[in-house]
Length: 409
Length: 230
Image 1 (cartoon, each protein chain N blue to C red):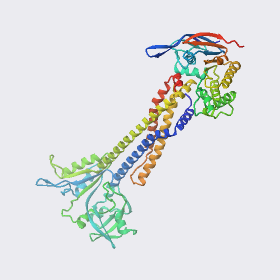
Image 2: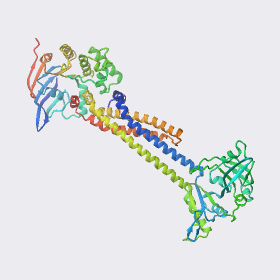
Image 3: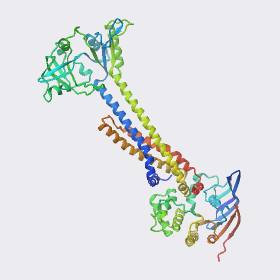
Image 4: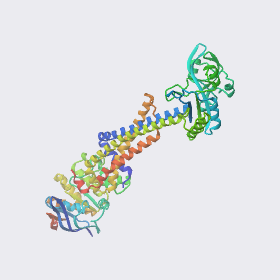
């Protein structure tokens, strides 16, 4: 076989001679590759956004809600019964080995006032474990402690949105705010977490000790009852184990007979979000597959043009054979030509696709991330398309009888 | 030394139900250094004969020996290698690659003989110079006259130092004056470097430049005689 450099020069000249035709043939590959890049970029972007939301709500999170109550056969919605207690939460932390933190929750909303500013937000009464459960840090101040919960102190942690709305540029730590007219000392500011999957602002919240919430803010009738318990499993592998341990423990504690329904619901939020992520991935894959089809069509375009080219250049092939070109010299010449077409198209497609996804994410704010993998993937795929669809025309050319090729008019 | 020897060469083309014998029982011997003209009316089989001895085509039956090597039964690539190293072709229609410079056209046989780029250029430039085409290296075939194009083709045939040059109606597309020039070039080549030349033509004044004339009619050799130089 003759050298690749010489072959490449021959190929480039042949493509240059038919500039318009080469460009149009490349267009198929360009569209295919850029579609693959953009689709994969959007897919990756969306699934990354979902996974960042997963980590924002706290990883390995399990939520336990009271079960539904039924009155005369009419079942009320989940959480309509009050069956969970702080004692349940303590027992879960103590006895379920797969659990690393718990936070019993009592929540509601209230008007808060600081100076002449006021703001309506959600109030979460809970225990210090909440920060670990939610994977949430503090940007300033300290967490509440067990003592705060025990003695129902009037301290609070503020979400960033609340800080922005009440304090503006003033340092909130140590300031007194009023929740339902009750004065609370701000002891900490929560790390911003952004929007939740449902579009809720997770930073628009105030955390206070559970006991304070129960006794002073919401004034629940049944002491010790909580609205929900949030639990963090030790690891994602432990999630299902934790779920089972919790179910068993609560059934035992609530004395539920073997054939009775649970009076609580254990929800594995991470699992739900993992499913959402999987859906996003599947979606990306599907879009990628559709884009691949256009790449395939582009490849067929290359094959078509190469077949035309072989026919048109039969004489050239004859001349080359007459002066000693071997079977593979001819084959490689046409394969390289097809490969050059598809590779140039591939590179152009990568450039267009990358800038397209850049525009998507900056102008249209659709999350899209061009991964190196998708670039390599579509580049090598376009190369393969070139080789695959170039081979048949090249093969056809190489089998021409030299004398017939020379005589071809 | 016998360079080319054919024994009972037959070439049949399938046309309709019955085969047409383009060559029938052709046995010819050509020695090294000869200048042979193959003559005959069109359809007499002279081109078919040249194509077969030029390894461009395969005979239906019979044997062909080139420089003592049996040619029938060789693979396509073996034949390509023989064409590359042993035979240079000059065609009536020049058969140069269009939109490719004279130099690169001449380089082709070297390219397929794996000669490095620098040496290719050197040898091709020298071959073009020898044929009086100095300064035309970068011209494309359509920028050259017919005579010049044929000279490029001859340079291409010679550049690999092939011992045999086969010319199929090399003057067919040229005017009389240029034809004479080309023929004198071939005579000179045969005389000075001992290149064996096989020339296919139907014009007797062109054939007169050769030393031996083989006449074909209907696929048979009808005469084979030395040319008496006056």
